[in-house]
Length: 354
Image (cartoon, rainbow, N blue to C red; front, side, top):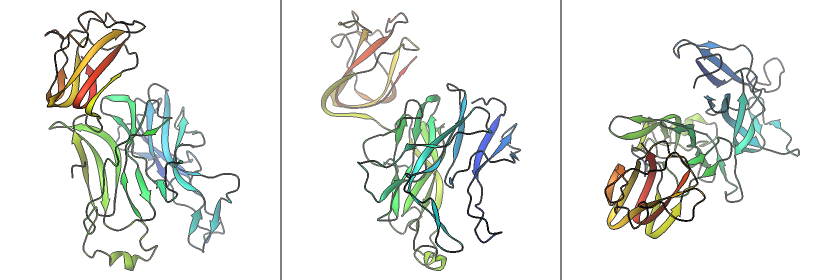
């Protein structure tokens, strides 16, 4: 299906959701907790005896070590509630209902033992219908770019009991925004193995053949259909099994800045890690991409690095060189600069330096 670090003390660590203690077992109320497991090699695991957090987080908990913050950062299910929500209330002897709207929370720890209380980092807002919730998080980073945080969560549309995967981005892992353009991964036709909804999990990785991929699962039956009556669920699409595999995109092409007519923009000030610019782009023969270089704080472009000097870029490729009268050296001398782009009939997916 092709859709439209180094820890402080442990080499590997994962969070897992423990089974709740049901009210009919010893008279206890239902309690959810997230436990952890550690490993020196990623193959042999040992469960930690104490919970990492007391949290109802039974869906796709993700934890990794942030080398910039020097903390373990976990993304878990959490809930949007306030002081008027009564918490968890009994529905019958076997089922407990959570009050609030499903959301994505973030918790941190310096030792993978003591985690902070999860705080909501992705939740429904004024632009979200009341019947929609963010369900799974699919938190990962761009390949070879650990400071480029992305999520591929499932937006559960309760009115259809289905939904698609969207792309969210963040520069710090805390403040998130939805990337415009619609779902990044949508279900297939009804009756197919992924005809109801799809979810993503794991790391977004680069694979041979020039593609990025992440694990996905597709389900043919609506999420709660029809409640907990398994006999009716099995009769909806007899013989149709769910599917799983890799959702893939061309290398670096999760999202593009698309210019259907003519437009221009400038980057924030950066100190390039190299002297050459390469563009992951697709430009029609009737269009162009032009790049000018301006040192930070200056009012004029660098001599010889203006829009008038740049060689017109057309074509399609993951690493198209930017040149000015045949020369591809930026000549920034390690100083911060901004890149000024002019585009026409073009899609710009990424800018890289070498």
